[in-house]
Image (cartoon, rainbow, N blue to C red):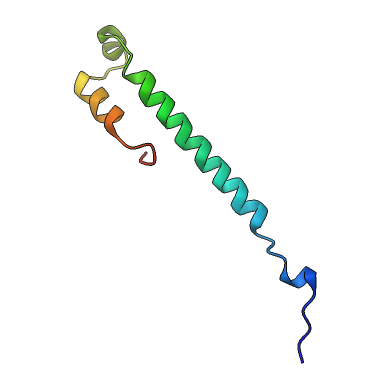
Length: 67
């Protein structure tokens, strides 16, 4: 007969998984904000960053979950 205690049934990975989920959500939110900001850049800002308008449009059109 096996015995099960509360301690043995505890998922010890839950805090790590939760932290990873929070970090992922934070990353997604940052990407959305950065891409939104990128669409507000002037032509000069774009040139100064070494980008083209096409680069900006491509980056801004990517979904938040894609790096």
